[in-house]
Image (cartoon, rainbow, N blue to C red; front, side):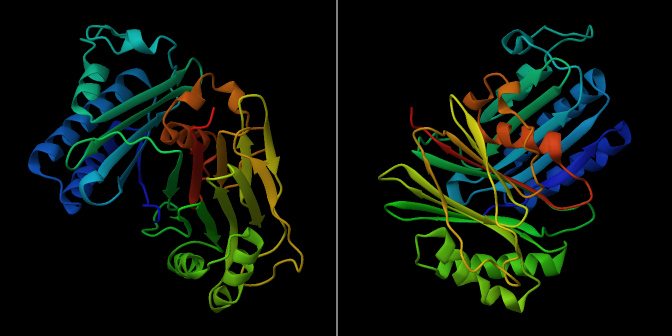
Length: 337
């Protein structure tokens, strides 16, 4: 299983809104969504951009077509640097407005969405998440979930970042890679890394990286992190090579895991040892190809761990996205108490 890229649409000026709406409309049609679903998406996007215009100085919309088959959906994430607000439940009520409008926007978006969530902080801004499913929404509870947010560098069609994972009866194995540079050649390296990763039967992250090293010599190579989660023992094994940041987040504490220096496909350490962590202690693993700063503190985002992982990924993206490069954020979330 692999991630799907998101398209970034700037919404910092009203002049972008028409192109933004056309772009998301085209994504939905290309993915085979029916006319009724596309009409809902058109209305949702119109309400989102209207809110951005009325309440903020602009923002950014990320749109991705995620999943396969009956469970395929379009996800739209609106990110702004507006004033934010505290009383979310109050703001979702029809007739509530902070600028003397009719106050139907957020309520309308929620009603037209199969899944809806919103996170906001005063002085920081707001993240709005909406999903429209191709054939209806069915909530599925899983012991461990993976959410990836991959956004190509502006002007690039393909991303030089990528994430893939595979599930066995016992293990979740995940690989996040950032190919050197950007564009098609970096993407080629990532796809080769994915292919090698899927072929590897090892369960030790160090052995998995060694297995991928030789095939990646045919490409420009890249940096990457392998995470193996044992669903039986609830233990993590994690190993990174290069500038992929790794953060473990628990109810009591958070900690960062250092990666080894090197480039997979060029030079990796002769000796590598995986970091082990107990999944009962850490509910979230956050991986970021853009080098999430160690000072990023999830405790500054009250209650965000209770939100959908896409909201958490968008919060990381909002604070640390570099518009001059590809960007990827991966969230691994366990349901353990």
